[in-house]
Image 1 (spheres, rainbow, N blue to C red):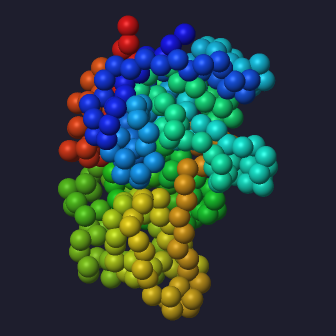
Image 2: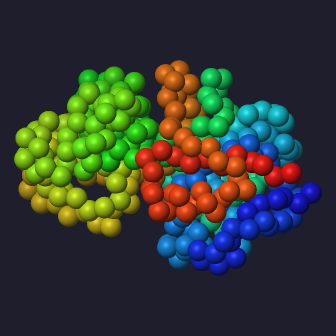
Image 3: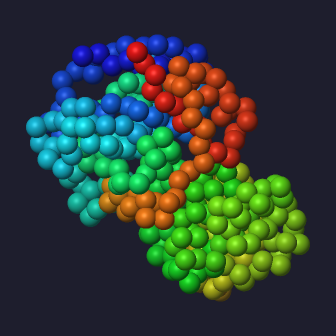
Length: 336
């Protein structure tokens, strides 16, 4: 049975109705009937071939919420009809050191949902069952999709860096990633500070869990923040005055990037004398993703979303590109 989707046939091309035959379902795969699919800036980058890895026809979409419509013969932990989600990763080798160690997100041979294959701007999408996660009760199916990309992107470093509930943390950038990070860290028990170049975002940031707010355009405010934080999570994709942010860390503090800034340049001596570090991370493993969803359900955490019909995909992509809203845009399947 063919899959109905929206695809671009060239870089930045209009997304138009596209039908393809997915072939026989693999023994370790599942097929998901898509109910909702979020739009991410990575979809824009792949649509434009910014990273030089896109293949056309290109079907975007890697923030999927839906139900299992079919499963392979080896799949025993998921059932047809079960509510599930799918994010950036759709497969890993299951055999390498990283996979066997539970770090499937670091597998050198992992497969991405929209790289070299067709994604979730469709009525159905397929993936290896390992990367398809059951949705806990209490999560809104219309809003859960972005948790599988932006959500796990900011939750994963909280776990891997062993952030403590007693830590003083900062979130740099209060956009699509940052507003979820504020919620996670607040419910984690941390004292949370939001950094933003937009002073008018203070009320917005506090509403998502920030206890304090710093206007990062104000150099005096950054200077006053010296020796204040155990952990700083950078969600923006621009270069910053890295030395000032390193100075804002307490001894043994960590500056962690999840936004793809072009480069990082910082003086080494303050890192050595303060036993400070700079790191970065991708999305998390399947186990960490499940923990993130359970934590979200328990604490009522959800991204701020705007839902549009999938038939308005081109308008939605333009809105994300032109306006770069702080909330997440989600498409609802309206294929007939």
